[in-house]
Image (cartoon, rainbow, N blue to C red):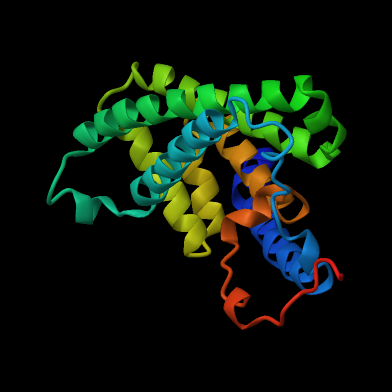
Length: 225
C-alpha cells in the first residue's frame, strides 16, 4: 500500500472533517451574518426556479443514496437485497438523479456567469464551489460507466468498507480497502473530501442552517419613518 494512498484516503479524510467542524464553528461564532447562501433570485428570476429545483432535488437524493449505500453494512442490507442488486439500484437511481442534478447545475452556472447582475454580486468562492460541484458530479456519473465492467458489487463493498472504516476511526484499514478500486472512484472520493474541507469557507454552509433562533429574535428596524 503506497504512502500517497494512505495520505489521501486514510489521513486526509480526518483533516477535511476537522477543518470542516472547526472552520464552521469559528465562522458561525465570529461571522454569523455570512452564514447564508446569498440568494440572487431577486436579481433575475428567469429560469432560476427550474434550475434550482432540479439541482436541489438531484443533490438531495444523491446525498441520501451515498449516505445509506456507503454506511449500511452488508450484514444488514443482505436481508433485503443482494450486493449486485444494490449496485444496480445505485447505478439506475444515481444516474437518474445525477442527470437531473447535472442539468440544473449547468443552468445555474450559465446564469451566474452570463447574467451581468448575478455575476457582479458573485464571490470567487461562489463560482469556485459551483465548478467543484460540477467536477464531482461528472466524476460520479463516470463511476456509473466504470461500474458496468463489474456488476457483482465487489467495488461497492470496498467503497462501503472504506467509508465505514473512516467513521469508526480506522484510517489505515480504510486506505487499504479503497486502494484496489479504479482511479475514477478515487478521484470522486478525493473531490468529495475536498468539498468537506472547503465547506466552512463557501455558501455551502446554508446546508446545515436551521432557523431555530428566528422565532425568538428581537425585532429588527428595517426603515424608520
